[in-house]
Length: 407
Image (cartoon, rainbow, N blue to C red; front, side, top):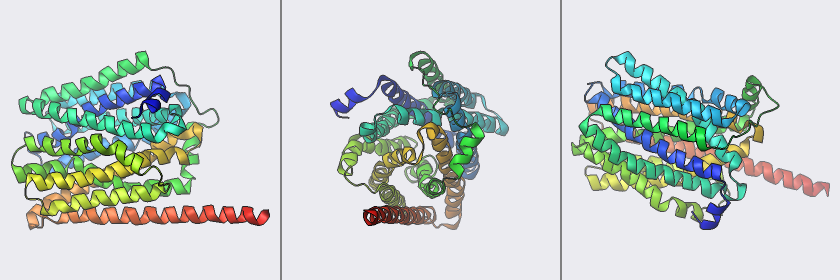
């Protein structure tokens, strides 16, 4: 990040950036290795492990709409602290799970915690970041998050080889520490919603047809994003026969973002068609995943996941920036919360359908199936977002012509 941008960034945003880094460290240290723990030590099928992951995902994003509306009404700081504390309990519980239902309870608690803090953190970023540096800050947040992911792979690989128990305790401890730090150091953030009740806030968002459509289309993007937690780790271990290389491949994604994210953001900063950029990025992600069909060595996998990472660099900062452009200031949390349904549904499909198709492709010896589906999803998302971009441009031109006629 440029020095002048950093100087313009308020202390609250700097603290939130640090918090996001640490939460990514704790989250990514656990979740990819949870899949390997469930399918390895516990002996579950990949589809069953995917069900646990999707329950966590849906309990987080499914309730994020309500969590965001509550945060708008009662304030972002308190909602963050409660959410982080609940996530800490859920992640810590995985260390003690022995029965199937134990894992589902831990997954639900982990998700509910996220449903409280995630919209609050995103809304706080949007509210406190000056608009002229917003894209740079959001891009830097993506970079910091991926630095956390790289660190998490080192921690995750080390602790998972010792015992999954320690990995679970570590991840829960990170979120507990963040809850305390936010409680003590983050300045109070006033509630922005003084006009609407929780239900009125939710009704307002649901009536915004363009935003609802945008959220539905993004489900395809998150279908592809979730493969990083499920099919990619499983594929890497199947091809290489070693868990160590799972960390190598996932770290390649993160290192690519760390090195190139800010450059990609600057290269594209003059491109105003944000919806089209999200579509292009998602299509590049799908292409990178499709090419795994032909990856029979570590080097080919690294090249393909770099392409996947490039797609995220194009799409992710623009997704984060688009939500506040749809939302009234007092309802930013509710809009971020509702947008979470794209992760809830798309991510759950990515995990359940992705895991099922991967297992089926092994049974049928049709290894191209899961990756071809990813390419189709990328094409559909790009097509729909390009249509939305064209419709928005047509409306804008119509308004300009009307103004010209009136003069």
